[in-house]
Image 1: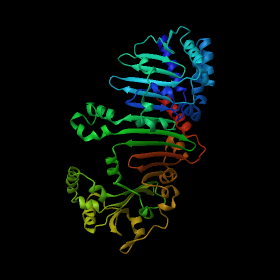
Image 2 (image 1 turned 120 degrees about the horizontal axis):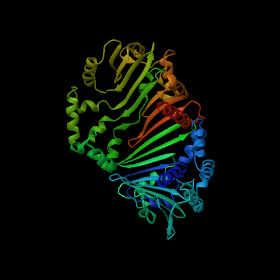
Image 3 (image 1 turned 180 degrees about the vertical axis):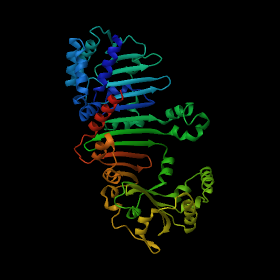
Image 4 (image 1 turned 135 degrees about the vertical axis):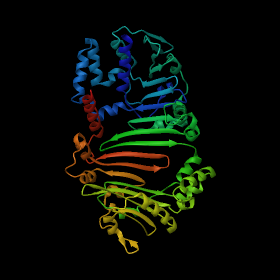
Length: 479
């Protein structure tokens, strides 16, 4: 029972830990070459989410405190009200590092601000019977467990968890570690509410060897690029928005290659998309340069695929430019449309023949106008065609400030979505959440960085609080 209570105390301390972008010596307890690392600014998240004041959570905290012995309850309430009473430093990051995945080996590091207060917390939550031995300035806690080991000194509090037997002393006296490796600089310097680093090589080993995964060792060659990748995800909550960013790092040769696929959108197509479109995707692509940068093997594979459509690689090269897709609504029916550049009339004939075979002919038009292929509902097509040319809509997507600010992105305009669904459509319990949002945007900022941002109409809205309150409500309902 003692080790269970002590483990709960340690994890509770971590939950109350805060985060700063500044790395300090205590992070040297994280060994070099981890499989993955998670850094959480839980102090900020607790403040922003106001979870301790939640009408559901607050009574649970009080109830939990009342069930503890008097000495524990007093310190528990003190730490909830003033986390510094735990003896930990809340201006620095709490970091969990997966040292190895098979077998699982994890190290958790937290900064110490007041060693005596930390010892008081440990003694209190172990009912005053915790065994602590000190040697060379390092104090080690007897956790009564082979898989759970704890130690601390004047600057750091370290927890080791290992399937095959935890030894926290492996980490206490490291002179250099992951924090000293330039490969992880971006992770440790990220000033976000949470950051996650993962090694592509380790992910490759997991994906290639897992028999239940869609890829297994027989197809390992298809995903070998993962060996040369590292992934950094950051999550950030600010007033009025939440942002999730994904950065993939891989060799410069591949960065240059993938970068050639992406071009800046000219936004030329947006003038043919109605202003009331609630979903818009607009990208610029350079197919010609992309094909030039392909290897012979890649080009041969592409040729085989295109041959099934009656096309070849040169056909694809003629389609460099913008690709735009959108969804609007008329009479509560979705109207799907697409516009993309095509600089070769012969290619147009092959593509339109294929489209006319695949697409239902009722209500849609496929045409080649001004070096663009249009797939539009007839009512919109009739508004943009002008003889052999095209004209812009009087009220088009460029009139929507959210759409016009896009850059190689997909955007969901929540107001226009609600309007398109109509008053008769019931979104149920999600109605208030959707109506409070301005937009959801997925933007490709570069070949190696993708950002998902959810924005509320009221920029003073605490979006983390909204999401967390809804999650707690749904969790209790599921029980």
